[in-house]
Image: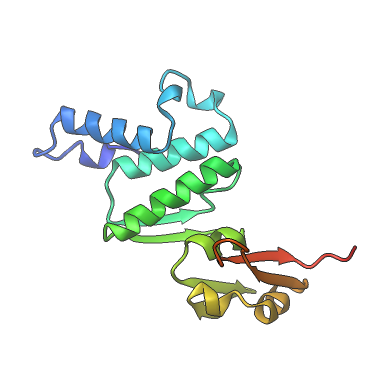
Length: 160
């Protein structure tokens, strides 16, 4: 975990490890937890610490399964901004999310799964359609443009 993959490297100095860990902790806003045992953290705090451990490794590929689960709105946005930043820096980033609004806001490509198979794959503007989402989720869905930004908003259709 964390910098362990770099421990055997003769080119990695302890100061490099310390810097990588400090940067990852700052990026995920977990520096304040440094003195607390992992077992004393909430689920969302643990998720952010786990992400910091991954980021400290400087991997060129991030595979993240529900990294926004148990996070408040601020930290959901923080995590996905970090993912977007890594992707823009040239890393491969694959994120599994169930929140279609987050997928619409942050993904440049979406694979929609149904019964373990890919139902659609492509840009969110094509994949996240009312018809397809309603079919896949067996739940009426509305996809609306945000009134200020035009970004896609995905909501279950609810009757009054």
